[in-house]
Image (cartoon, rainbow, N blue to C red; front, side, top):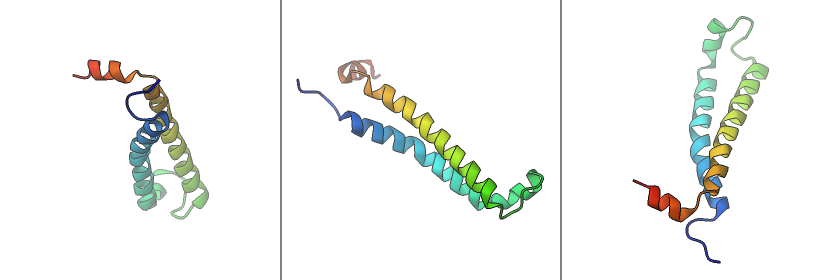
Length: 87
């Protein structure tokens, strides 16, 4: 049976990419201004690689999971119903 619209993998890739871009931009911006952490968090130095990499990893994983949930929900929607409901 032919289907209308994109393949499920294309939809997942598109939604995850759109969701992870702002996350990565925020992580990179946070790493760039990481020296502010020395004034905000006690015991963290400017070049504390373990803390910075742990925070960057956790934030990236949370962003990826937060993008995957709507991506898989989007694959369950019937394209004709989505087109009819679009206003």
